[in-house]
Length: 71
Image (cartoon, rainbow, N blue to C red; front, side, top):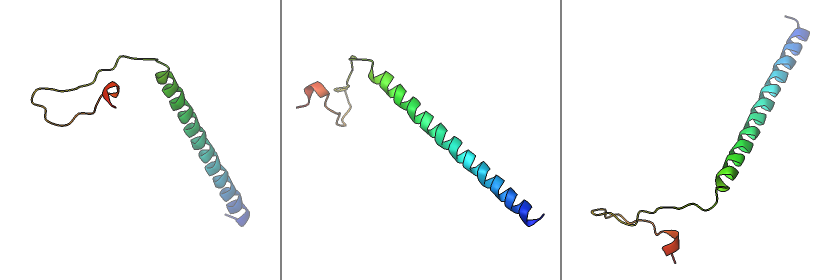
């Protein structure tokens, strides 16, 4: 293989690597956008009834205080 062919092959490999990097970055950005949209959709559910475990017979570990009871 001649020197020119080696240079052309190296340039083609570099270009292919650059394309792969661009594709990976685009996929990452699209994934972040999709995750943000999902979070916005979940946040847009409004007020929901929430249940808190405030005690159980025989359960001795401390439990978090529900928001409406915290001071």
